[in-house]
Image 1 (spheres, rainbow, N blue to C red):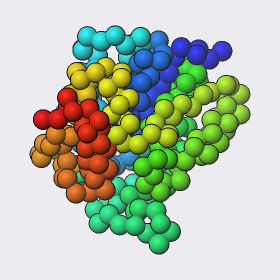
Image 2: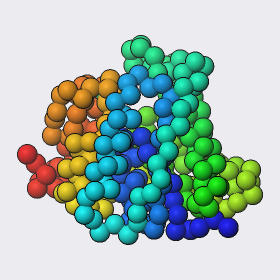
Image 3: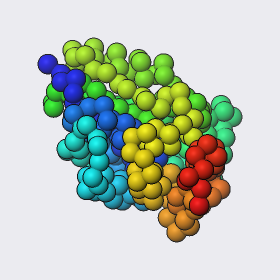
Image 4: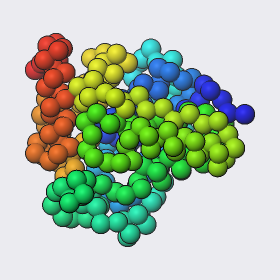
Length: 239
Ligand code: ZN
């Protein structure tokens, strides 16, 4: 039988999945993490996630849960069958179907399947993902309807009662910082600003008040916008 106190978080090292991770640490006794190497343009994200996990493990906190196993799965085959600009060196643009060419078709579906396999074997009921409809990039696999359908498919396909939790589904990027603040205050905000990675161009050399990035790609733009609103509402974070 699946354990309702156990969870596994899809953790990429980005702002959203970091918020999901700290949310999970306040909601479940045991938290495992899973990340994927699918041939991203830059492997910066994978390095950042490792550093972030290390810091979270070592910081004194009031979290109710404990971080345990971390998994990194190699899914590089995805690159050989996808033309996404997240995987290949091409300019980021909006395609005729209204979806940005950073979309990796089926990516979140694959991620959830792998998380489901680990969850099944470790009696984990809760799978946590940072999918979000609000600052919607147009990715159809971030829609709540897709997630509800995946929860049903995984449960039917493995004859279990999985729950997929998406705590950010209806939150803005500014709200995501609020989630982090509520989970661990300024100390946690500082760690996630410093260690999480968002930029599509893999830029870790320019440091801004909101973290590292190129300051101009769509992912940086969203992060900047969210941070500015958050700081407006929380002036103590203004530098
Ligand atoms: Zn950027």
